[in-house]
Image (cartoon, rainbow, N blue to C red; front, side):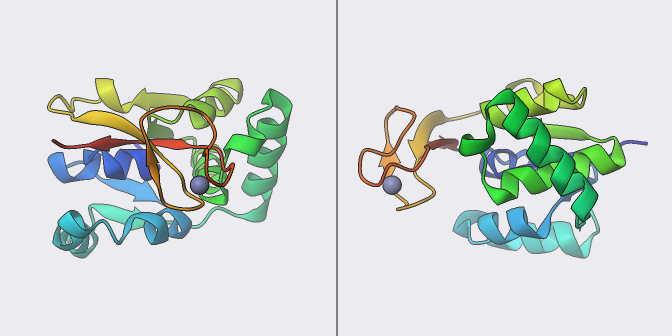
Length: 159
Ligand SMILES: [Zn+2]
């Protein structure tokens, strides 16, 4: 079964808005991305037409994802949103659409399928910036926020 799971980076890159596939995500990720203003209506339509489905991973999946992330050393880079995506993928033997390096690394170690955003048929992309999930600032590059020390995440900006 096709069980395609979107992490936050996939939403920021606009993946679900450009295809008629059915996508899954977790409520943690949905809460993180639902305020993307320009896609606000588009998100509502995806939900209404059942092209975006929200599922909760169970505790067993969360534990398994957490253990795997600790084993690969990616755990400090991962938010609870990221862990929820990995857990959902473990439980449903799905595939994760992401450009997040830490998620991809843990998923590969678990033998899960990864579809990088750049190769998922999304061509007209913008440029990547690094953003801080802690203090909500943007930075041109780096791995750690120079302001608050939170690990930076990448997102795509449309010019
Ligand atoms: Zn910060």
